Length: 446
Image 1 (cartoon, rainbow, N blue to C red):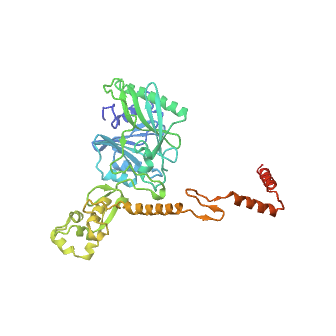
Image 2 (image 1 turned 90 degrees about the vertical axis):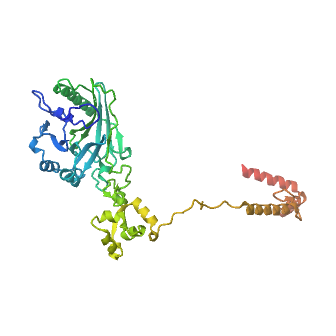
């Protein structure tokens, strides 16, 4: 068992101190621990779990076999399809992976393990979305934060990582919430105070903890589960660095954490499960493109076997290639490459339908318009308007003057018009007619 108990590594020794008992100690800590297996030197070293009476137990060494681990972890698997998560260190970085049934079996039987790691059975959250509670503990104050994933944990149309990540993934995959239950916060503070006293007691005073960051999960039956410890500092420790509040746990490079699915119908694949045959880079399945051998050979016109064909058919020699390179069945074969390599092949192949790239730096944008025609048309329009205005057009009764927008009616015409209206209404005095007309207008206006 590792003796380091401070820092920001795996901190797997905390499970050992939680399990260690003193005389007249029942092993009940007020919280539960899922089936947790500690790997040392690529082999399972310890297995901790919670018994039916709520006490923390440790399985015997003869139970640390692949058959027992597989049987126990695959019993009552979550409806989400997630069996367990695996935490390990790679290049001084803590990485967590979520494993479904196939990944879990491959991990146990075939995969090479890290030197140190933690394998823990996945626990269903209280609600329909995966949640995790982060507790920052100090002797004076405790801070709590609940991180909830945005996707439905049991909607298997989404990628397993898009449904499961909380503190491990990008911020746009989850949302931060405050814990409103004062009883829950008070209860967690009480049990962690007792846990710190217990660790100090069983370590004979060598592990006096004064700062700690823990991750918990609350299940459907309101059981509180301790998931892991992220950062621990001792009071007499020479480390002066503060505890890491933000979870410094990352996802593997084979997971594209920048993707985000808007709807289940258009769910994206986050895991890079396919290797490109050309560049050997892991890619998502939806980013792979089919390419025919005919296109590969059209790009490589020399007599030597193309590198991509040689990677696919490792047993093929040059003589066999010369016989097959004109065979229609061989040319119609296809392989998968990433989208970047496909675009490179398509741009170099003449029969691919891709637009050829320009060989010069000439600017093919629209040239600036010649304003001479527009200026000439404007001058002609202004001249025509000037000729029309300068020519005075006179008719009987009104005259169009220069720089006037409307014709001006003479006073004589206006008086004759009013007299004709007066005769129609039976009035000879035009003044009385106008006064009556204006009086009617004022009444209507009022």
